Length: 169
Image (cartoon, rainbow, N blue to C red; front, side, top):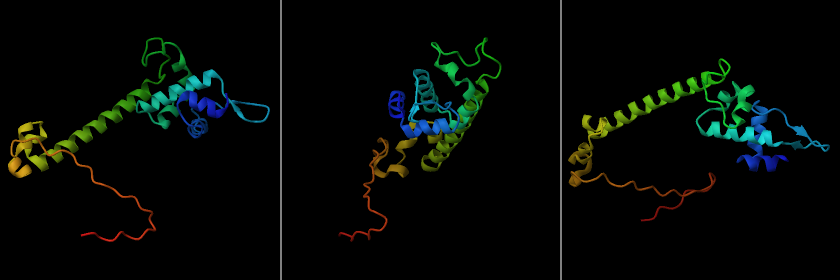
């Protein structure tokens, strides 16, 4: 398969495929007589694994650290992380680090959410007390009612060099 066909089969772009090769996630593919990349089904299967792992929250750097074992995940069924027959350090370190990072981010976002709710609605809102969302101070005459719906702000796109539009009354 040529690069465009392989990329389409794996659900990515040729540019992404070149990036994965450049970063060491894919071994250099074979070449045709004219020098074009020539991908086999095994490489497309590996590309699919890479795309799935990136979609699961791993980074390219995470995958680089275990690139020599990515081919194992193309097996049907793939081995489980931490399986008894898996070689020691066969990726569970990467998974453990990613889980630790995700847990820290969840904690950070939870604290951020609680702080915002506390500032906006008082202590009751920080802990999920839905009655706090009906406070008169927050919604004036709508006390006890649902919060107002989200209303998107219209955005107009102009080129950076365009002069500002005249104000309309």
